[in-house]
Every structure is written in C-alpha cells, then in structure tokens.
Image (cartoon, rainbow, N blue to C red; front, side, top):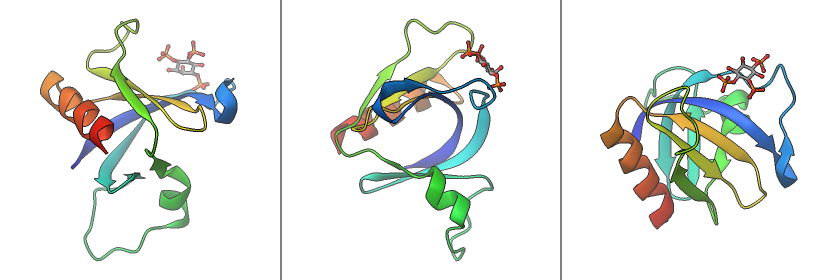
Amino acid sequence: KNGFLIRKVHADPDGKRTPRGKRGWKSFYAMLKGMVLYLQKDEYRAERELTEEDVKNAVSIHHSLAMRAADYSKRPNVFYLRTADWRVFLFQAPNPEQMQSWITRINVV
Ligand code: I3P
C-alpha cells in the first residue's frame, strides 16, 4: 500500500515524550512493504535507492498497533501508530477511507 501521509512524532523509544522542536507535522510518501513502513520525502520513484534519511524514517510495524486517534481533534483522519519499542506516531491520511485502509493494512501484518 502506498500514499501520502502527514506524520507527527509523539513518543520516542520506550514511550518517552518527543521533545519540543521535533513534534511538528511533516508530509511523506508512505509505502508499506512487508513489515516496514517506508516514509519518503519525495514521491516514490521505482528505481530510486533508499536514501540515508529514508532508512532513518522507516518504521518497523512488526508487533505494532494502529488505531484511529479518537481523542485527537485538531486534524481529521488521524490515526496512531504504536510500535513494538513503544514509539508513538500520529499519521494524517487524506480522507477517512485512506485512514481506515492504512489501519487495517498495518494491523493485519
Ligand atoms: C510542535 C508543532 C506541532 C504541535 C506540537 C508542537 O512544535 O507545533 O504542530 O502539535 O504540540 O510541540 P515543534 O514543531 O516545535 O516540535 P499539534 O499540531 O498537535 O498541536 P504538542 O507539543 O502539544 O504536541
């Protein structure tokens, strides 16, 4: 599954609150491949090698949980992603259908 997602980093490994200055919303082109959610700054280009930054931004979704951010009302179509190492991200999808589709796809693998 591919598509644009806007990400906010809410918690770092072990659930430590991400410090101010690193909590802003950033747009990515997201690609779910196997157990990895790749987040690229530019739109996906098939032949492109992953950059160092792409690797850094990639998230392992093994033992992770996605759920609608029912308690977050500042933006629509936002879901949480909690990873196995207790990082927490918020992702804003372009519409409710895309949000639900990402949640379902992340939770089935
Ligand atoms: C953050 C940025 C986020 C905001 C967050 C700020 O600042 O303004 O948009 O989250 O608030 O800390 P920075 O870019 O300097 O990290 P919201 O959009 O959800 O308000 P927060 O600390 O209350 O999460």
